[in-house]
Image 1 (cartoon, each protein chain N blue to C red):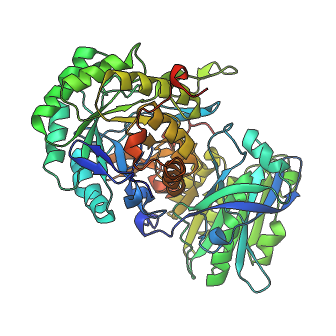
Image 2 (image 1 turned 45 degrees about the vertical axis):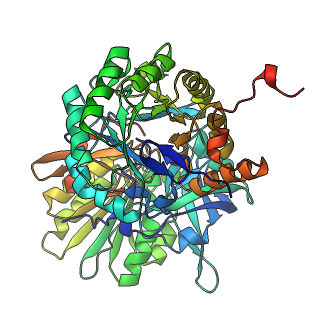
Image 3 (image 1 turned 180 degrees about the vertical axis):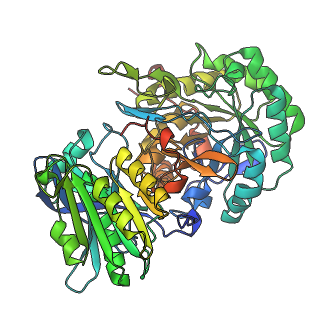
Length: 309
Length: 288
C-alpha cells in the first residue's frame, strides 16, 4: 500500500482523487450510493453569496467523446450551503472543498469570509473560469491582473487553503498559474471547460439555450494534460489536474505530467461508483512500480532525450 | 399536497449492474421490450422509478439514458430477478437497445428518482399514458392492485400498432380506455378526450387521483383537467438528463413554491411531480 496522501497548504487529502465541482452536486446527493469520505476531497458546486437560478434548459448536449454544458451556476448561495449542506458533509466525513464564485472582488471575499467562519470547510476553490456566465469570474480568470487581484483579495480574508481554478481559454495558462502563485494561492486547479458550441443544422438553432457552453470529457484530456505539464514547469504550487479523467491510467497521466491531485467530473455522470476502483488503480500502479508515495510520481515524466533506449 | 418527496439521503442505495439481456421482444419496427438480469435493482425498485442505461460501450454517446423501470421480473418463487424496459427507437442509443441480443450486457444504474405514491381505496387511480409513456405504469398498476385500489388506464397512441400490454393491465384488474389518432383502435382522437368526459361524469362520486406520462402537451392537458375538476394529478416528466443522481443540474424543471417558482432536478425531486406545481410554459421549449 503506497502513501497516497496529498498536502494542499494546511489541508491533507487522504488520496489524490477529488470529485470535481459542478459534477457532484453538493456531495450529499451521492451519500446513498457510496461512502464519500473515501474520496481525497469533494469539490462542491460553485456558490455565490446568493441563490442563483442558472440558464434555461436544455443545458447539456453530447458531442464526440464529450459533452457541452451551460448550467449557469445554479446554486443555493453560501448561507443556505452552510446551514443545509455543510453539517451533512461533516457528518459524512467528507473532505470538503468549496468552489466559490463572485461577480465582484467583494463578493468573493464575502463568500470566503462566511465559509472561513463555518465548521468543516477544508479549502476554497476560486472559480475564476466558468465560461458560461459573464459575471462568473471569467473576467478575473482571463486577465493576469484580475487573477492576481482576486487571489490576493481572498488571501487577505481567509486562512483556508485557496485554490484558483484556471481556465484553458487563454493562450498561456502557465502565466495564470504564476500570477496565482505570486498572489499567495496554496494550489491551482485546471482545467475548467473549453468554450464551445454545437448547432442543429436542420433547425439552425444552437443545441444549448445559452448558445455556447463548456466542453468536458475525454475529448479534452490531451489538451488538459499539456496544460498541466506547462504549469508544472512554471510554478512550485501543488496542481490539481482535471479534464476527461475516467480511469486510474488517466489520473496517472496527469500526475506524471505534474498534478499532485486530480479531479474527476464528467466520468462521474456515467459511472458514479467509479471512485473505489480509480483510487485502487492508482495504488496498484504505485506498488507495481515500487513507488512508495504518490507524491514521488508527480511531474516525473521521462523525456525522450533522457529516456532509456 | 406534496409529491411524497423523499430526502435523497434516506433513499435506498442505487446499484450499478452490468445487466445481461435475458430477452429482446420486438413488438413493432419501433418498439421493443428488453428483459434484463438485474436482481439488485429489481428488489429495490418502487413504482415509477427509473434506471440510467449505458446503451453503447465506449464514448459515443458518452452519457447514459434514463428509462422507466417497466416490469419487475420474478422467478417461480416470486423473487425479483430483473427488470424490463419498454424502448422506442428514436435515436442512436435507443436504436442500439432495439438491436440488443440476448447475452449482451448493458450497464444499468438504479433504481433512481422519487417514485409514484399509489393511492389507497376508496380513492380510484386513473392512469393516463401516451405512447411509450406507458412505461412507468406497469409497476404502479401492480402496487395499486396489491392495495385493492380500483384503477383505469387511459391509453392513447397514433395507431393500434403503438399500443401494447393491454391484456397485462386488464389482467391486474384495470379498466381500459383506448384511443388512437387514426381510429384504428378504440376512440379516434386524443386520450384526454375520454378522460375529460370521465372526469365530468365522476363529479358527484368519490376521490380520484390521476397519474400521467407521455408527450408534454398530453401531460399538460391532464394537469389542466385535474385542476379543473379538483383532482390531484401526478406526472412523470422526461427532460434531458445527464447523470440521474443530482450531480449535473441539467434536468431541471420549473415548479411553483411559496412566493414564486424555482428550478428543481427532475432526477431526484422527480421524475414524478405534482402536476399543479409544474410551470408548464417553461417545459415547452425543452428538447426530448
